Amino acid sequence: MAEEEDGAKRLAAGAAVGDGRAIRVLLVDDHQVVRRGLRTFLEVQDDIEVVGEAADGAGGVARAEELRPDVVLMDVKMPGMDGVDALRRLRELDNPARVLIVTSFTEQRTVVPALRAGAAGYVYKDVDPDALAGAIRSVHAGHILLQPEVAGALLSQEESGGAQGRGGSLTDREREVLGLIADGRSNREIARALVLSEKTVKTHVSNILMKLDLSDRTQAALWAVRHGLTG
Image (cartoon, rainbow, N blue to C red):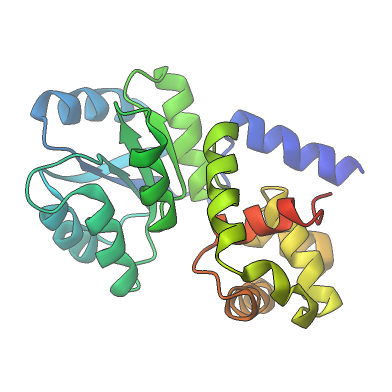
């Protein structure tokens, strides 16, 4: 119980985890003023380093492949390749960067496709600067950032996709891992809680996604919430 409470506190605070290395961030937005503002704020954070910028989705993909950042702050609406297409391309390239959508659009029809394309969460462009830093730390730690109304929309889409009938193929250990994913735990935290190696946890996560025919942790977390596997 103490460990669960500690994990919840870390998530709420957006605490950084890892080996002490600064979180490497790439900024992708077609507005130079926005990029400049983000860079100005983030560069004063001791644990965050802005390693590059791009003005559109295609440039963002190229820079992400070149720089291999930990986190990408990605706008949705951009000329040429937009943020959703850039996310899909990064997934095709198996780029490990966690993508945090930074958008001025609040409609579900804008945010939901980005999440289904692989985003780890989203924040609005008027977000409090400290909350933005916390969001970067949280997605870097493996957490998923969703608003309740968007989570509901994703759940509705997941239900119509047929994944709910495949839960019987999960092992007991995979169901444990899935429940911890839904609780917002990173692979490192899951490994600690279940006394496993991170490599083993990654294998379990891959098996869960394959068995449920889901494409990412966001969809897995929502499946677990829908089926009562949260802690």
